[in-house]
Length: 411
Image 1 (spheres, rainbow, N blue to C red):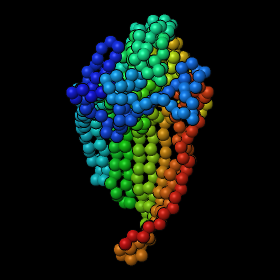
Image 2: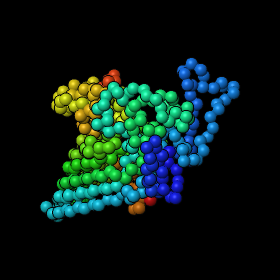
Image 3: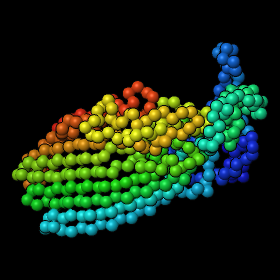
């Protein structure tokens, strides 16, 4: 458990203390629960005798704020020495007029962000070398902390697994650094834009962007709020961030957007075309057989190229499912963080409008807007959990064609 002591945070373990400065930079929209909000439980000790009689209620009490508070639970700490995150951005652009109303622009943009918060890691994890000890880690041995840890905890029994005693903080379960600001991102992009300003009733803009976004902190794109130490975090090895370095969950390497407006008399037509690459996806296996050792996820082994040619992709098999095999217990899978991509996005929107002038400064505008003109709903992400039914299949999609009518009076 972490507690305040002279503006520092202390983690107590069976083998010593770790001192971490308090008040580190964190994301302001989330709040760790303990010690402000915490829960206690009362469990049966033999799976036969009830934990308590319902009419009498439980006998557990709130955990007092002492140096031993939180023993047997998952706990937080904060390392303020990591500092605040900051971004550096740069860009350069060259523009040339081809005709009086037509221009072309070539641009480059880049950025790097350091001290990105990585909330999903576990300080209380075995090393890969320790994991290689194999089945001996699962053996039950006498618990040297029996009597110190509440019996309501899974760590409060007379015996305990050998793996738990080898962890850095054996009297706790998950130990997380709240917003561990150690992540980095790098972004590079090239863009070509062809644009025509309004001339003879026609204007248009066509833009293509080729980019690459790499990071080791994609978990910060998760919409879930971090409210406590998380045991099933999507990091393969908390002690090896190099395994997380991959194309970002937000990486879209190819984006083409074309829009325009053509006006003839009182009528105008405005199409918008969008084409972009699919998003990277991580592949995991249904059972994390290394969870006992503090590993948050177990990726499968990658044994072949997971990409399928466009002609072989189907909704039932979007990627090469045979490219993945389950990683055995006590090993880390060889798959990278984001080895496949989801479906690309293709969409055409169209607006047709007519402006009817009533007086010099007043007019009616009638408008029909069609979203997803071709009625090809964007496909959802495929099932990326090896060992579950439908692995590799797509079972969801976005909205079909939507048509709306509008009338506007301008004065």
